[in-house]
Length: 489
Image (tube, rainbow, N blue to C red; front, top):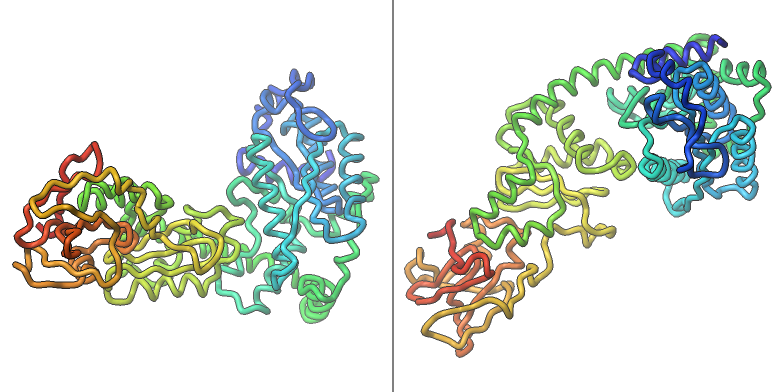
């Protein structure tokens, strides 16, 4: 076995993938599977040989070498037969040639190839970032579709060194120096300890054909300038600079693990799950369960617990909360400055419901709870946690019993006033009454109001209850014949 194959086998074994035990079981599995998908090759024996894996294959030297290595490891009984996934971004007129190279090589090696075409948002400031977003979305979709356990990517030590230097140039924080992770979610990068020169040497040794992307030489991309200009220049001062940058990344990752440990403990102490949110709303009004069903599930953290932790631990906990709500690709637009805004929201005095609209996510402070909720709409100005004005309640189905009818049943409107029982006839704005009762803002606009048709005087309001002197009973749903208010009564 080639030394690089042995190195990759060791990397995979370190995460429990490619053990000899699972490989030995696989010798009986070369019969294939009739349920295959893709352009070439068969499903192979992944069911017999353990985890189902794929290789993200651009057609370049790194990914073609990794695909060849995984095929060799399969033949030696270490891993299941790999699938090659190629993402065509359509950014070059000749990009189809790369896809054809992957398809042809997969056929020669007896492997399945999946070619995915994606549309890249060319309006984004960074075309590289837009392509990466589209690529990882495609990877995630294929991982789910193919039932993959692991998706192997061919990032090398050279890529790692470039990434660290790029982040230094952009002014990253300490944990940004951790750069490319060896393993994250279902992604594994077994070549991260191997240089690009070693990979290209392997391709020569094994006579592997690979594509040459002309955009890798374009100086308009920062990575290319770092690769071809800044790293060689700095290597004049330290010939082992690339290795030093990789060690810096490893050190930063170790420090990050320490902070993660502390942030995990903080999350455990501060966490309120979505069920707790619904329970809290249900205590306010039985119909709140219906309103909350239209709110995207999220993660809630108690502000009082967060405030007791050091700021770095708090900020790391915010990042963890985001990761639990959004996928890696959905969270790509979120930066450290956004997490600092979240911390400012936590540290400010309590003031009812305050939403913070961030890329892909809405962070809302509802009194003493901080909620992380997936954005319900694409546009920034429409990302709201407030449900439809009717609140999902069929106003025509609401039954009102009282001696001052007929009644008008509607939703709350700005400027509404009433005379609640607890104020003994004194008039006050509903918005103030909602604040006093700590009704979350996302529920207010859907609140049901019952007013006399004769003069518009409000007799009853959801979450607040009946007006002073009103003899009225309101049924909102068949399940809850009598609507009440447990907050203000």
